[in-house]
Length: 197
Image 1 (cartoon, rainbow, N blue to C red):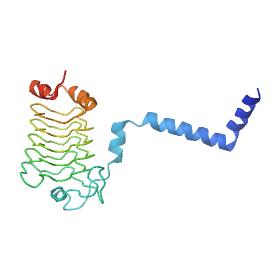
Image 2 (image 1 turned 180 degrees about the vertical axis):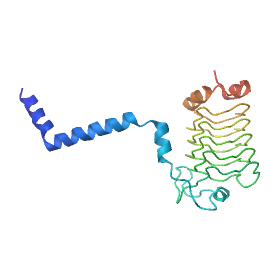
Image 3 (image 1 turned 90 degrees about the vertical axis):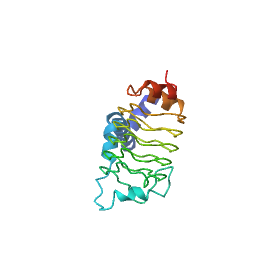
């Protein structure tokens, strides 16, 4: 009975009420924030820099693996269709690439850590020897893309179009592979290269 009285005294004290309010607020924040909504809310406004699309040709040279940058690499809505020389080997870490077009581009040896490429088009892109680490390819068009000897660690492909994509010698973790194999657009040859069951 004494323990219960102590608990009630603490609960009704200002400190106890503060702890309760903080706990309830944290629980509400965790349960109501969907990842998709949270991701779209975190995107900054579209850059107004006149040369923002050309920044892809320079890339991001600060903190490649962790997506650290001095200013955002905003490539949203840019068109790099059939670019055969300017993107090869570039670091596009933490790049905002949603709704951009890279169809037919040579992106061999590119480093894309923590890039956001939701809804982008990469039809026929060559990603050979690239590092695609924690890239969100949700709803992206990757038809005929080549992932030869490509690192795909932590990348997501929810609702991405992967028809005729090549996954020869792709480096991917077991859990990431299981998630990738749930994509029904991957053809029989791609599924065999990945080892999907």
